[in-house]
Image (cartoon, rainbow, N blue to C red; front, side, top):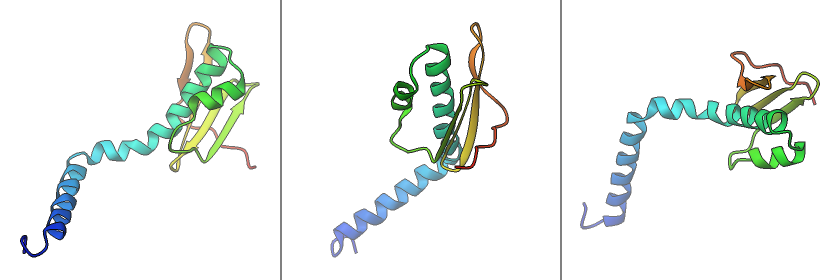
Length: 112
């Protein structure tokens, strides 16, 4: 089989190796969707309310390869909510000494 179909054999081997690696790292892969929204909310909050940068600069600063599907910057409450890959996270500015921190429960995103 290998001599007759070397490319097919290589493809099957590659799929088997990738499947094994995926299975061994399944907990890390399951955590990945949380990273997108959490990173965006936390870094935007820090950029905007700790460093005092403009909203446009902070949006560009937190832009990632995987796009976020929803975003809300509550300037009055200094809270930022972002949704990416189906997971929503909120970061809030706690004060000048504490900075921004991810909250255990995400705020609801306003309807657009």
